[in-house]
Image (cartoon, rainbow, N blue to C red; front, side, top):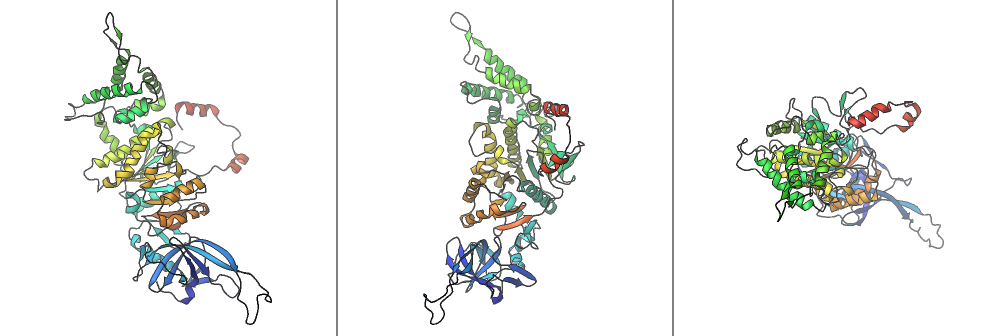
Length: 563
């Protein structure tokens, strides 16, 4: 990185471990000059822009985070005294920098700063060509996701291996562009890596939806996406583990919960054992994914709930008599609720042999094969979404855990609105989904299972999951609590960058972590097609909207649970 004196924009006047303060030089009119490098005019002092700090053989790349003014009093003229002088206070423009890394003698960027400059070090403007060198090692992988905000002509490249294998988080308040960011990342990933295997948990029908004519629309081209309604996918009850079934069917706050779980475990193990011989299995546990009859389970529980035992003179109530009254009422209620049919009354997943086809559909190996699978959870009842999310997360992990070719077949699970089912609070309702996603976060990398969490409330998202994310893609966040929480998650050297989040425009992203060579503020490409996440135009619809609605049809859809 060579430049002449014309690129000098200021001098270091204060050095701290995490920041540098620089006095900017000014032209004869007292303005900060525009620096020209090649054919490029660079406006000095823009927050989010890059500069280089030179001192001897040390060259440090830094990011501008703040620009301010301080008072500057001109020196006295020869023979002039302070009492006689007419003092005119001028403004000294000052910028604050965060050191990002060192530029070695070969011109390549290395993260981290081992030797800090001292006061008086020159600060130089940096042009597109110099910044372009920084992204050189990632360019060969062809995963470009946007353009630098400070240099719109320069593409931003991410390292897909670091991004997907070491997990990532997309954080931003509602309306900041999270859905567009997800669509952009996935569309570009499939374009660069056509054999990708990506599963998206879609809570609100933003990535696949039906238009007014009932035709399926998608944020992805038809030849790359497979849409799966969570109810049609039929993740059946018999595929659930003992702990997940307990979360679904047993209220742990009941007085009889302990007796219920103990007996339930024994019954479940006995029913699964029936598949041991047909499947030629040597061993079956309470969690083995084999079919069992739900009717048989209910009958066994009902018998125990009504069982009488011999007494001294006559039969008396058994030890669990009446202990399952609430259990049976709760299960009966859900069996009579059509919303739970996909889980408790499967139509196609009615045998152990159906598991293989379920997994093929799930990971995109069904007919036809697709690199992206969108699992639509919008029609699933709110109270059962955590259970379904836990199932999907566990399926992704178990699939590659038992896959001998897991290194050749990595999976990525993207969780939209993750705080809704992987919360920070340890509520019993979310125990299964938390455990499932945290397991992927902690162990998924070893088995080729990546995790992407998307949330508008990072402060409410599992701390364990976020702590395992290697890359953060932060969109606009103005809530002070969420900003503080994000600040506690990023590397110490990048903490001050969080102040930028409140000033990001819609679609702008601050990328931090392992997938970028340095903290990068960029504007993501507009996805094509776009997701179904546009804000409703209140002004236009309140002026020209419909005069009436078919309320009977709305009621019918509500009752049928069909959108």
